[in-house]
Image (cartoon, rainbow, N blue to C red):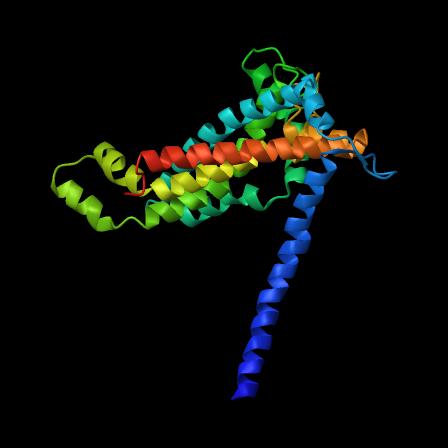
Length: 292
């Protein structure tokens, strides 16, 4: 009996210990290291030197960092609502019993599984000023060509359009799962009461789709604040820092300028922003009693 209990204790320790070790080594330790480095001057080549709050004081006067914050906010404010609206429309479309609907589900989800860097490179071909698809279409309509990725005006909208297209499939699947969990009897009862499609959507679909909407909203905001690859590949943060985002600026500071301590302070600032935004979002949801 004692041997059996000992076996259970050993097995429990192994199954519990491995995830704890993984969590400690790959999550807790890097976070604590970043917190420590944010109070140091560290260029990778030498040893970290403790400088207290100097990195955070410099951060308050760093125009490029605040430009990155504004660019990230601009990217998020446009990408999240537009992407969610289009994803919901697609989910409503493919939730219907139409011939070939499985094909459309596959096509709309395909961009999600494509590597982000590859997708960005393909869209750069579309945005080419001389041979790109979009300028060709503008020429057919009689409009002058645009400098999609080399203009301070058009660079960020161009990145946003590509990002929305890339993320449509993932959010669409979440909304589709939410739609398919709504009992059909509710729509049938509403129809018997004389409710039209608009009323059914407003009073049945939207309220019961709230958990999916909250999930998509929070994950989309977090993903938007962490945007990096498409900016790195398509514009490199330019022109004139018009597409520099927070994560891209952290990368440039740490690995181009070798100011790892300063970049760690930026990373912690991003962490605080994400926690604040998530808390506000959850508080707004709770105030509306969206799950009730």
